[in-house]
Amino acid sequence: MSNNTGEGFGWGLARVDLHALILTCSRLHAILQPELEAALTDTELGRDVFVKAVEAGKLHTVAKLLAPPHLINPNLRLRHSYEYDTPLHIAAKTGRRDIAALLLEAGADVSAQFTSYEYQPLHLAAFCKHLEMMKLLLEHGAPVDSLFRSRDGPHSQTALHYACEYVETGHLLLDYGADLEHPHQHGTPLRWAAYGYCLEPSPRTRDTVLFPLKRGADPAPTLSGNILCDIIPIQPRVPSSELDKNLIAALLAHGVSRDTAMEDILLRLSTLAKRARYTESEYLAAVTEILDEAEKAIPSVLAELRDSRNL
Image (cartoon, rainbow, N blue to C red; front, side):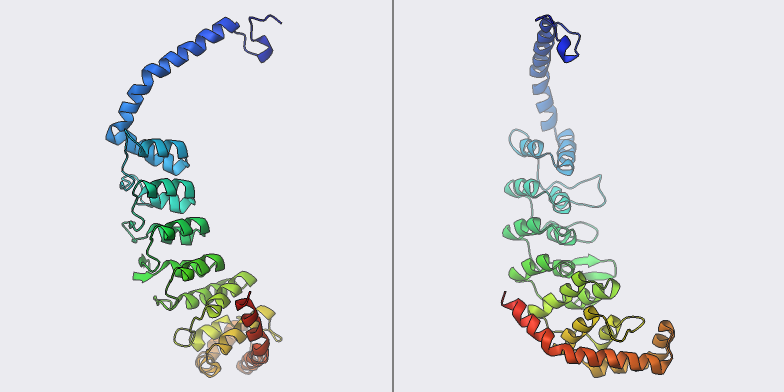
């Protein structure tokens, strides 16, 4: 192979030609770079590139555009986006902690609100389960109990309502002083977690109900017998599953009234029995036995809760 060719590399160019091409590219870069820098400093193009860089997680580009001479405003409002209002909202949603740290260092507003539902970055990070992002935002002063609009009503939920669906994020917010008893239209965070269990019974959703109880949540004013009978399966099984039994035992042990639950069941007995394809007497007998099982399990469930608090 000739020393002057790049045939070994599959190029078909003499080395001298390749060297000339590299020099030409370097000269073009030197000529065009100042024009590009000037164009980026000019507001509109710089903002558009900045937003795209945040969305794509291009850390170097974001850092460059936040620094002189560009000094892009980290709190700019996104004109072409329905979902997010500031670059920090984008970073919170995508979980890019490094991007968020740059934005915050440059002066991004940690409590900036999304225009439609007034989501703050912490709300989005909690919704997306980005634990490290939540830590960063809280360290920079994100208001832990700020409210956002839900589709069902105004200013009713906090980040904890979302975070209670995942134990780690819930613990983090409580460590920063979140209000465990803040109500919204579906109840407190504990009530919200119990509702999640009703929709998807599993060890994970069971634990999200137990964790607020471990942290001292008061179920009595927020969890009526109604939610207790919702936790009972549509077709009550005897013996009941360990998941259902232990959860019902924990709720009973922490103040949910069996009597109130039975009153509610009796009011809806015809509908509940029909839905379960039981006679009314069969349904009532099955529910009674499930509650009896749960009451017998209370001592062991309380012991488990005490042990977990001491871990």
